[in-house]
Each structure stands twice: as C-alpha cells, then as structure tokens.
Amino acid sequence: MSLIELSDVTRTVLIPDSDPLTILDGVNLGVEPGERVSVVGRSGSGKSTLLNLLGMLDLPTTGELCFEGESVPDMKSGRRDRVRGGNVGFIFQQFNLLDGRTALENVTMPLLYARGPRFWGRERIAADMLDRVGLGHRLTALPGSLSGGEQQRVAIARALVRQPKLILADEPTGALDVETGQSVMTLLDDIVREENAALVTITHDPAIAARSDRHFRLDRGVLTLADDIVAVS
Ligand SMILES: Nc1ncnc2c1ncn2[C@@H]1O[C@H](COP(=O)(O)OP(=O)(O)OP(=O)(O)O)[C@@H](O)[C@H]1O
Image (cartoon, rainbow, N blue to C red; front, side):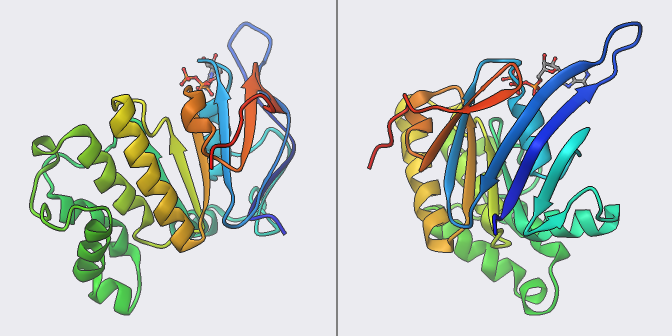
C-alpha cells in the first residue's frame, strides 16, 4: 500500500466571470514509505497545488487522494488535521521559522501537540534533533543570527522532530547558494533515510531533483515521469 496516493486527480478553481481554471489534470502519483520523489516544473505549472494535496491541506476537485489507504476527503476535518500533524513534515524555501523564538523553541513547537513522554521530554528531544543537524551548539540562537543554511537545518529539525512518515519540501534549497543547498540536501537525505521517511521534493533545480529515487515533471498541471533526470548515487 502506498503511503500517499493520488489517482486521476484534478484540481480546478472557479474564476469569477470566466471558465474554471484546471490547475492539476489527471494526476496519478503513489509515494511509497521511505521513497524519495522529486517533481520539477516551471513557475505556475501546479507544483504548490500538488504539494498542498499531498500535505492534505487541500482536497482534489475530482479523483482520489488516500493516505495509508484511507480516503482523505472522507476524513472529518479534525481527523485530517491529526493525520497531517502526526505524519507530515513541511520544509519551505523561506524556512518559515518564528523570528522571536530560539532554534530550540522553534523545534520544540511541534511537540506541544504530542502526548505522554514525547510531550514531557520535548525540550530534550528537540535538542537531540538540533544536535543531529549539527546545531547542538546553537540552541539559544535566534533565526536572525543564523545563516541561511543553518536556518534551513533548524527547519529540517522542526519538520522531522515528530518522526513524520512523509516530508514535503517546497524548493528547500531555493534561498541557498549551490554548495550550501547541496550540503543541506545531503543532511536531509541522511536523516530521512535513517528515519525511513518518504520525501517529496519540489524544485526548479535538476541537480537537486536528481538526488531522488524517482523523478517527475509537472507541465501545465500534467504529471509525467522525467526520465531525462538521472539519479546520482
Ligand atoms: N486559488 C487560485 N485561484 C486562481 N488561480 C490559482 C489559484 N491557485 C493557483 N492558481 C493558479 O494555478 C497555477 C498553478 O499554481 P501553483 O501555485 O500550483 O504553481 P507553482 O508551480 O507552484 O508555481 P511557482 O513555482 O511560481 O510557485 C498558477 O497559474 C496560479 O496562478
């Protein structure tokens, strides 16, 4: 069973005084546990819309979306929020850290929704996670005092601290120079592998896309295999 699966998914939006706009058109994609998938596509091709569906933030207009075999549109919204919170980690181009909070506070935050030992031990768990991304010595640093690469490491720690089964990374290297971007992706790959999480990376950059196990291209809402992107070992 796929971890998350879109079957013949269409997403359209209604535009006042105009025909409906089709943003995703007949998309089929199954992501397996522990698998790394990349999606490349030009600006406006529908990448963020696809990511929002995979993250169960939006629902398909037609077609099916299942998480671990369960229909996402059939979930009540409270359950959908719990399934998302417990299973999906997000990483964004602009890091999206809370400015006034330390690195440790940023990474602790998702554990405020945990229960039992993970709630009571949240600061130690978050500190361990920051240590794993090489920032054990910057626990009290505010995001503004960290470099872009360090901020993205904090964001990776925050995305992974609840041990999600699925990580969704939207242009994770878009705000970093090439070398920093590659080192951040190496770190992300290593942790994702250790945790046996699935990783879906949306990127403009073929070198970043090539790191994944399977590669797709999105063009005007149509998703196809991108065989010209060659995996690097
Ligand atoms: N709610 C909406 N209403 C109208 N148009 C929308 C809406 N959401 C998305 N679009 C349009 O659908 C297309 C795809 O949007 P989307 O944000 O998914 O693209 P993208 O590939 O992520 O682009 P970028 O790389 O620039 O972020 C764009 O042309 C966008 O303007």
